[in-house]
Amino acid sequence: MSKLAYLGPEGTFSEEALRALAPEAERLPCPNIGAALEAARRGEADGAVVPLENSLEGGITTTLDELAGGEPLLIAAELLLPVRFSLLARPGTELGHIKRVITHNAAHTQCRGFLARELPDAVVIAAASTAGAAQEVSLPGSPYDAAIAAAIAGEHYGLHEVAGGIGDRDDTVTRFVLVRRPGPLPEPTGADRTSLVVFLADDHPGALLEMLTEFAVRGVNLTRIESRPTGNGIGQYFFHFDFEGHVADARVGEAISGLHRVCTDVRFLGSYPRADGVAPQIRRGTADAEFAEAARWLAKVRSGDV
Ligand SMILES: O=C(O)C(=O)Cc1ccccc1
Image 1 (cartoon, rainbow, N blue to C red):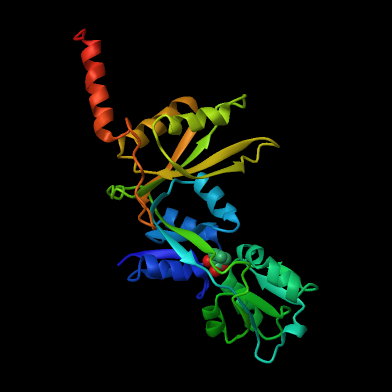
Image 2 (cartoon, rainbow, N blue to C red; image 1 turned 180 degrees about the horizontal axis):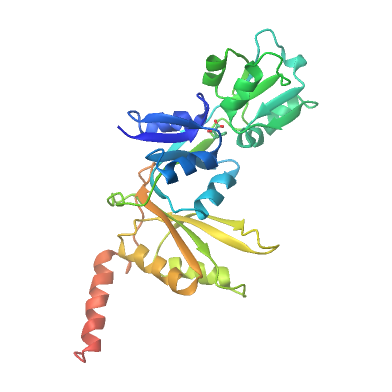
């Protein structure tokens, strides 16, 4: 049985994602996303389940930055988890009493409308996780009045639901990934996604266009592109790419070798089945057979057989 690290304590959305991705796995709760990834890197766990992006606020920057640096990890699977937020407090607390709210930043940013409408004077304090926030509220003498977390966290820590479904949209989805130390890749399924981090060679006009061209001319459809600061000064960025297809596909292999040629560094983050099962539309001239036929033709030309 495998052991998987996740952002704890019990009752986080990450735990829900882990249970859905690997119901049989032993669970190792960690105090933050970085610690969960480190547990996977050091071999204290066989992998980690971490949030990568959500449909309302975009990338979970801690995860993006952690995966771009440190010992390499590969994404082996992904999950799209609908998230529903509740305002949880100690029994007896009413909405009007709530002045200090604690939660994870990703939950805060998705409940801004509710907070502005219902608790305009409340201060919101950041916690490492939603369930960690609920646990804080449950402690005797806690300085916090309420937490924003999953309803299940309320059950774990003896809190009651003051308000449910408080997200700004009721169709918000968070994408979680299961990462492992490098090893054999999942087999292509025909509906796969590949993730990469690309570091530019130098800053020049059209640098982003050059990267995008590697994908465009091979008919590779991007599903996410995100820039993150390198930390080396204003204007210095690296790029996260997610796109359709598996590295075993000729068009994907050619696109990422093209990036490897023209960029300083390309970090491969894995090819894995898409959670939504959507297969790519293969444009004319970009199927594996067409790449193979073109390679045969080139070999003939090079041998003078025209
Ligand atoms: O804190 C949690 O429960 C997490 O797993 C991180 C998170 C927070 C809010 C939305 C999705 C994931």
